[in-house]
Image: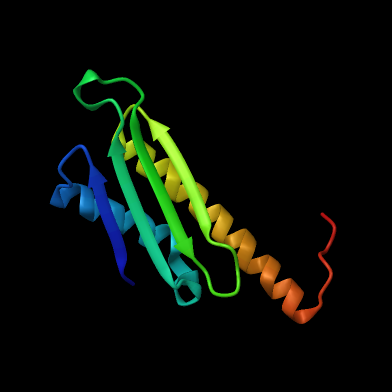
Length: 111
């Protein structure tokens, strides 16, 4: 699975690339066959001034569905990536299940 990664206002290191790949693969996991494309955009909004300014934007393209688009901003880039991939995982699972229900015509089972 190809993951398009780009960074603005800082250098995208190999360690960060490995971390992104690991987290995205974990997030998409068993649904990787249903994914058309994955983009990860990282940016340091304030530059060297610091603060809660590390942004991770993930876009996952799913066939016949709206793209999953997650924005997460944190003080630490690794934390922003972790939180964004976790949210992306939850959204992908929800959308895939919803599409499967619609295709089979099954009604959701009440909890």
